[in-house]
Image 1 (cartoon, rainbow, N blue to C red):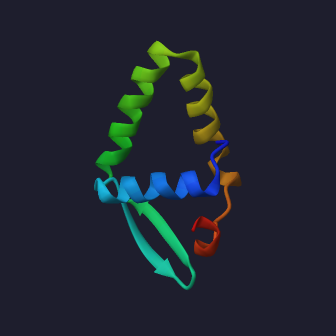
Image 2: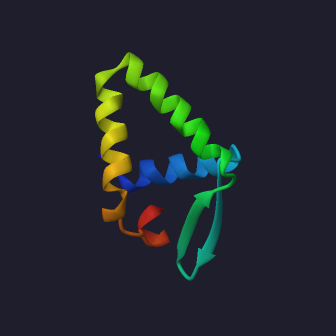
Image 3: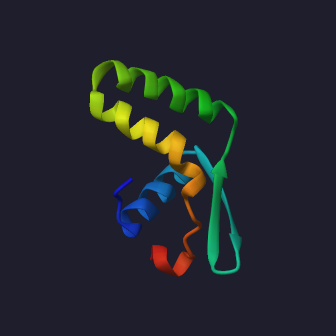
Length: 80
């Protein structure tokens, strides 16, 4: 998505603080998951709104949902 590790880490922490994500530690890594299945509906609704308003958002959403299998875990030390 073009984010730096520090920026992605900050976003993950904010999403966890807002209740959208839950996390657990696995050694030096912090693994994140959606805190509730309803978060998917929220993200879907935001995506649909964005798609109606901006072509850039459409491309980002398509890339995220189609390319997430290629994502690799990032060690916690790399997020600091």
